[in-house]
Image (cartoon, rainbow, N blue to C red; front, side):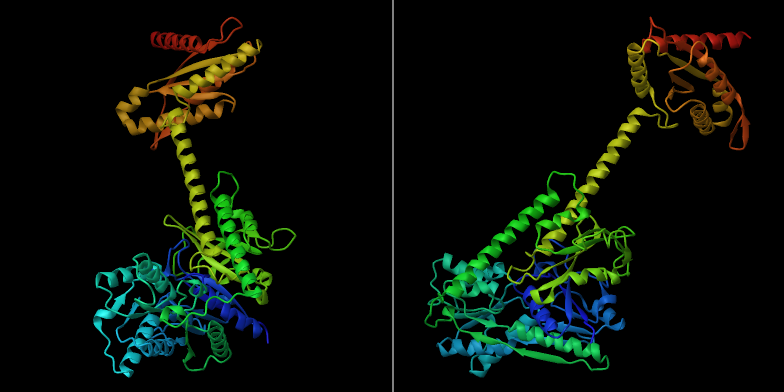
Length: 620
């Protein structure tokens, strides 16, 4: 059977919860000859899934590559799940259910492990047992139900004053509950918390307040994260067997992919209580052995490597250099073995559409010329199939996709091949960090380009006539000065200043209106520019006065030929709003000499010559 690819949608694609589940599913998929990819649905740089809420994620990322979808808690809403089902994709929900979605689910049997924990606490003589958790989440409500069932089974009535809402699944929620317990005079003798991180926050706050645990309060968490065993007291907890969970998820989504006619089903994976110090049991201490010590050293090295990667990413993407972040050269400072960047082809992505992406950068894809760069696809085909070949599934490598989006702009998506990070807190993994920093780098690049463009427009406005676009008096003065300097360095260099005034322009304004007069001035500017060379300058001084600077001409009468061409061009009738309009022209000329190349003097001489010609024309 050909290898199948299953997509895992998750708020984050790493961490000791989401990452651990992804790793469990990947292990089972690899053992079964399949592979997985993980798609982050939260905006990069999000602090936590709890505080961000369910993301408004609508894109069918990689659907054309996938045999099925696995959806972790809080990844997408029911609308996305229904859209995937309509597209013929089997969907398995993990740790939650979506009413009305007609989807199968794999759930940790949250109740069984919590019931066992509460029975254990009751065995220690506790009757005033509290519960704290973020009850907005399905799995936390399940844990609360297990707590209630155990109390009732032992003839104890759950008390409303011993139920606490944490508001999140992190240390901060546990700290808030500790504060509430202290203010209430510690009404419970034991507490079960919805997550280990809640429990860690509670233990820290109570310890800081002078309480001795578990003497003053027995504590039980849930998840059995790595931190739990190293607390003081070590944390009693409920373990989710993520290897069994991953195997169940892969088995179910594989069955649904093989037989689309299977009815929706729910499979439960049992949880179990892990006894340590914080429940009041005598502590056995930390195991000390060579394998344990080497394992701890490996974790410390991993932490140091992660910190180094985060630091180098910041320097590479936000440092003071001119390297293009789209090129993905910065990926060399990360553990990623390959990657590509796709930007939306129509600007910001339209959300629900299978919008187009253009691959503008790649890293590590083959030793020859870029294989993916410049290719285009729709998001359901992204990332390109060639990227999957780089993933070493048995070693823990998979393809990740994260949004590249900031508060200012939705840029596209970043795909990378790398190791699953399953021991960091959720959201602290490389992919989330990379997506956030890359979006910030692209924002900064766009902002700098916009500022430069605005600066250039302001500079242009300061040096050019707003109506005709010709150089104004300020820019003309600079061009005259440069011509004078060239003449000073090269005695043979000659330049001429021709000052032009339109005869009859006022009559056009008075009879046809100022709009017609403006059109006439624009046409005059166009004809003048067409007559002279690119090295010459045509400027507008204001009103109907123009200056032509001939920067270099063949003496003795090269300027006269230009003057005649200008006169012929300007005295030819103009078509202004369907009317034939004719104007006359007075031109004053001043020439540089070996003795005089003063720009200001030449401009005054040309002005005087123009008025003499205008007076002569009137007498005629």
